[in-house]
Length: 59
Image (cartoon, rainbow, N blue to C red; front, side, top):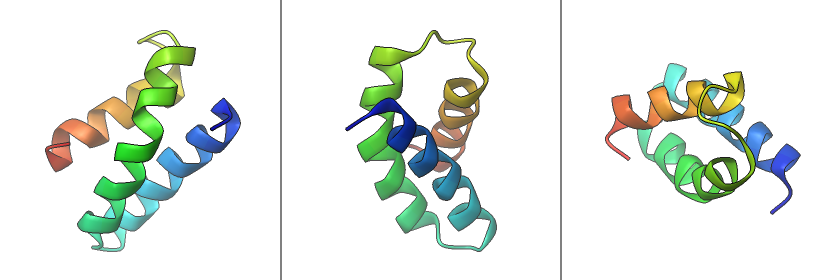
């Protein structure tokens, strides 16, 4: 998966979480986090937000 798609999926995961669909958010993060972890530094804003959401959701 391209990194820009992974970023978009992580952003969509945050939206789904705010809408109350935690399971969909978890699934999106499970798909996108490996790409983000490979392509981006931990402090990069998109990855940091995805990691925080993953921690919140227990991914």
